[in-house]
Length: 493
Image (cartoon, rainbow, N blue to C red; front, top):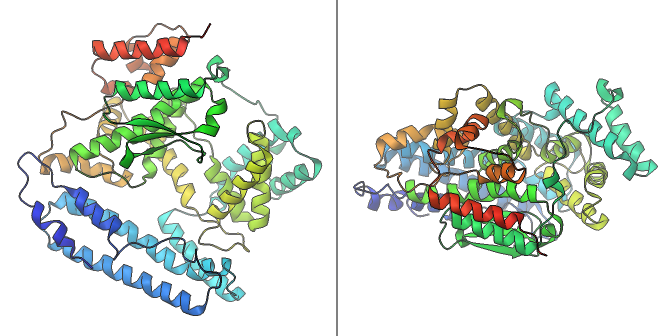
């Protein structure tokens, strides 16, 4: 095991014009062999034995011991106090999750045909549940507000889409809903309270989508970034190490202009820009996954045509699939997911793809718990729960507080619990923020312009609190926005 201080001893006296390069420190935490473990515990094992299980448990003990050693070395280092807090938060998060992984070894072995007694299975499930309560919060089923919100969402989806199901599927779905004695089931349902926007029905070619993303990349002067069409993926993403915006070819076959405008905000103005700013401020590469970025990206989509005061966070597929798994074994969970996906996706996704997506999602929510029992991995639920907290924060604070949070959010790629360290970073480290990039949220400008509305920056700042961070739009920025608008409006004759 390399000494943690080896990564810090050469960067103690580089404060003049530079930030301590914590990229090296996080490289150590993320890539050092003393910490890394493949989470697919028995991926290459056809038969899992007791010896395999003991070896893996011993490996976790070794990793946990290494984390303790690193924390001790961290306290003895000459790093600034705020840097120590930042790194300690990351180490504590890893430590808790490794404790959870260690206790899930037998449950994962059972999925690889290792025999467990009922007593063993229940013992480990209760240990996992206690740890999940600490890391991800309690089960959905134990919180009436969340449970009723999910049931309400399922009821709405069923009322609006049950004609797509056969009689057996209808009965299976209804039996599940009725098992909760949900009072609101008999109420009438209005499918939508929002206006139908024409932009949702305007579709673009894949070439046009790529061009628009390239124009937005140019708008932000994200040098060397490119757009990559990938035939093997189903989701939009950002690959920072390659400086790529990845677009799934299959989804571009039918994607609305409104969705493209939302994705500008999601992929570029959250993921790419935060990554860039991290390389400027904390000198970190920002490769790690952070839930807060997904919350903020989703919030941007919600703010597309709503004010923050009117936003209500509805259950996502994370909550819904986890709720199924909490109340069903793996077979019934998969069946419920297939029915749910059939109702919401059958027009755009084949039955084979629905079955595969349901199976993959089932495995995700049953990871580290039992396939045979009514238990769920609640990691995905934490995303939606924190998103609700973000919305409440913005709804309950004044403009200045909201503005400061946005500015701190884009200071660097930080977890939600670390954003409050930004003030200390600014006070303790010599950081030049003059080259940082902030979103322009041009999707909203384009959206309003496409509806032929007259808008000004003052109006935008009044309509959407996030625009408060924009002091002015330069001539060249306005020119690039106009070109993007022209490209969107242009029709081939």
